[in-house]
Structure formats: C-alpha cells, structure tokens
Length: 638
Image (cartoon, rainbow, N blue to C red; front, side):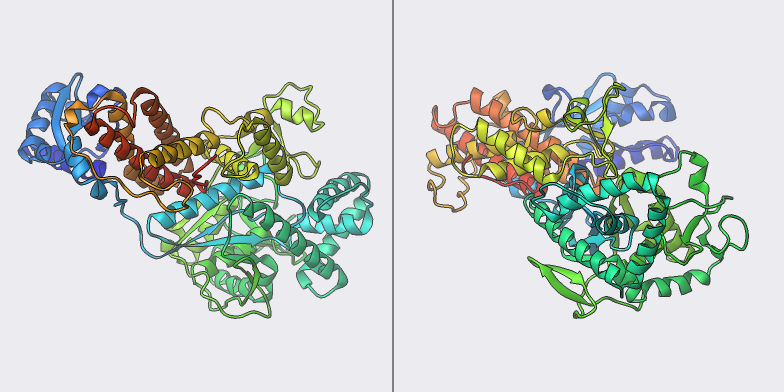
C-alpha cells in the first residue's frame, strides 16, 4: 500500500532528524499521510515538518527541505514517486510516476493492509421478534452486512450472528396483546398484524395496570418454556423472524446462525456464567433497599442500580451498578448477553446444537447437531449508540472474570438512530405542531416506516422514472438505492429519513453508482473488450504505454482515485466505517463521468484510445470491488 509505505519512510527520515538534534520522539507527534486538496500538489502530502518546528526550533520550510533531502537520499523518488516537493508553509508533496504505477498496477491495487488473524464474529440486526422490521432496524442490518463483506474481502474469516430476543418484554407485550386485545383491519403479513397489536396493547396498559401484571406472568412462562403461553410466544417469534429474514434477503443481507435467547437459558450458559461471576468481587446480591434480592454487577463507582430499558436521563446513572438478575428471578437482557459473549469467545464449556432454519441459515435448537460456530478471536456488535452502557457492562464482566484480551477485542460499532423528517412524520399521522427538526419512530405508538412498505414505495418511484426496462428489475434498483442511502452517512450521524429524498436517483445515490458501472461496461463492449449480453466477465485490455506527464487532467484525476482504492479499504477496515467506501465510490463515479464527457474514449489517436479503454476497464473493475463491499449489484444494463 503506497501511503503506508510512504508513512514508514517519512517516519525513518523524521527519526534521523530527531537523532541528529539529540531529541527524542515527541509523544504527541504522529506522522500522517494525506491527499492534497489541489491536484497540482501531487498524490500524497504530509504536514509533519510543521509539527516538528517547535521541537527542532527551526522553520517548517527548513525542516521540510531537510526531510526532502533525507527521503531523496533514501531513493524513494526512484521508485513509484517521480518527485518530492517542499511547499510553503511546510508541506511535503509526493508526485506519483504513473508509468511506474501502470507497470506494477496489480501490485499497487492489491489490498495489502495488516489484517488480524482468526475468526471475527459479527452480530447485527437482532430485532425483537414481536413485529415487522422498520427502517431503523434496516440501517443496523446494512451496516453489519457491509462490515462482514468488508472484513471478508480483507481476508478475515467472518461469521454472522442474528440474536433473537424471544424472552424479552417486547415479545411478552405482543403475546399479551394477542391474548387480551382485539386488532382489526386487513394485514398482509403476520408481522404487520403484530405491529398494530403491540402498539394497541401499550395504549391499553395506561388504563389497565392489571394487564401490565399479566406481562410479568407471560415473561415467566416464556422463560420456563413449557406452557401454552410459551408456545404462543415461540410460534409468534418464529413466524416473525422468518418474515424479517425474507425482508432482509431483498437487500442482500444474510446470516450464518440465529442464536435464540431462550436457548442460552435452556443450555445452561447463564448458569455457567453465574458461577464464574460469583467467584469475582464484582458480582453481588443486594440485601436491602429497593434492589434487595437483585444480583448486581459492580460498575466501580457508587450507584443504586439501573433499570433495564431506556437510558436514564441522569448521566450519573451510567456509573451505577448493573442489575443482572431481578429480585423476582427474571434475568435482564444484559445477564444473558454476558453469557452469550462468554460463549462467543469460546470461554464456556457449554455449547449449542443447531438445525437448518432457512436458506443456509442455521438456528440454535434443542434437537440439532453440533456445528463449529462461535469461538471468535474478535467480536463486533452492531448496536445503536443508546446501547453503549449495556455493551460497556458486558466488556466490564469479561474484564472482571480475567478475560482482558477478549474484552479488548469486543468492539461496539455504534451508530446514530433513524428518525423521521417533519414531512415524512406528518404523512404517517404524527403530530408535528411542535416544529421539531425530526421525529423519533416509536414501535409502542406504531409510528415508523416498515421495511417492506419502504421497498414498495421506492420500487414504484424507480419504475416511474425508468425510460427502459433492461437489466436489473426496479425492485433490485430500489433495494440498492435504500441500502446506499442508509450506508453513506457517518456512523454517528442521526439519519433524518425523508421519503422524498430517499427516492431520488440522482446525485450521491446508489442509482448513480449503478449507472456509472453499466455505462463503463457499455463502452468496453463497443471497444471489443467483451461480447454484448454474453454474461461473461470483460477481458482486461493490455496495459498501455504512454507518457505519464502527458495525462489530461480528467485522466489523471480518475487514475489517481483508482490508485486510492487500497488505502480506502485499509482505512475502512481499521475504522469499521462504511461511509468511507460510499464516499470513495461516489467520487470515483463522478470522476469517471467527468472523464467520459471530457475525453472521447473510442475516438482519437490510437495511444489515447488504448489508454482510455484501459482506464475505463480499470474504473469498472475498481467500482465493482466497491459495489461488492457495499452489497450493491454490478449491472451490465440498467
């Protein structure tokens, strides 16, 4: 990888300057290799000379020129770089020799990042099995699936889990609603019926405290698993999970195994975890006060315990000890999650057995067979930012049990939730008179956009805008557009979902990327690089010979972006950041369309045609890699 190699060489040069000055490496100094904003400043740049000015007591330009000499003496400019420039106020700019790059393009375009070894277990989706999925759930699934694809391409062994909370309050509420309320109206799917039932029972709770007591009884029966109520809960959850898997499949999202919370209890994983925790000083039973009888995990600070559920508005509550077993004996979600993570890392002797569930997906089952799931070296949980505290408690439990290495390899990929724009909220019947910038979705109130409904609306929008009916179906294009929309934002950004904006097909959209890919394929077919409609991969044209200094600006900008692919991959892997791939793919597509409009590809001198056809092929190959990581199709036709 060019930037990584360059960074190492710059560090060596900096260390030599510091040694000559008799100064140690400043603790705050970090060598960064960036991409210059202006195309005339080369392909890479560093500001390290400005950072060294105070330490070396010299001007940044003096340091830059001296560092330039050191790097030239190390002969790095005799490799892929044709020139090193010192530029005011103290930058070092590096210019690629494109003839060298082209002659070794396979070496430079192959991913060479440092990837950890061993299996990585990624848990995502993990929707409560009590109603249909909404767009907030879909953002989770798209992020998790994209990370699985990213790490697989980077060489990791990846195993994808979908955790099914079939013992939680939400399923209990839906079961109470089925048994004690009446939901009317037409419902195409069972999950939609349960969506309305869940919202209805939560309204009824307000005037019927006795019905809330019924929920406690249902929770006990779900956990015991032997009564008719437990069977109703089990059948409800399984039916909804099957519908949810079907919804996710439309977006290219799949799983290796479903882990049911009820099996964690039934297989004795919690009992084993309980015994381990009892042997530590961090786990204790409260003898008096409002939490008397509860088993609690000590956080480290003083606190009176935190209730399971929504985050407390009091920031000090996040320093409170965590209740794992309530006084009535019911386990909290975090308790079972701790047991689950001990199993994920292969730290329990107990194990599950499995049965096929659907389309290559396995499921924990009492009547199943042994399978090599779990035992991960790294565990990644894709859960929104509101679950930061429970995730921290799982990590704390691992540390308290002496599993510090595993705790360090437990990663929480946190992301901002999806809310509704005022216009979209109003269209769903939400009172928007408060004039807020966004409105939260609420399953308890029945407010939200179901995944299936969104896909249908998007498909109709795509269909109405298509001039031709070739290649991908409108439904496939719609799914790609939605998926890209949910991936392109920075993870910590709250996505304010606007139905009108989401159905746009121009600008920074998934549809724009698909059209660019298809356009490149059409050009290559006309150039004779492949047979139209053959369904076969287009053959790579010969790598051209040309004067790298004679590149036209659109050619150079496109080639430069292609060269940045491997380091974009590396950054996305290190940061677990889907939006980096989205930004890269959009910029790549923009530059190709600019190149396509400014530089006639199939007309002109033979050497330019040869170069431009090869550039088109290389663009298509590189965008295809990005589309694969993003989970988007790579169409021959649109």
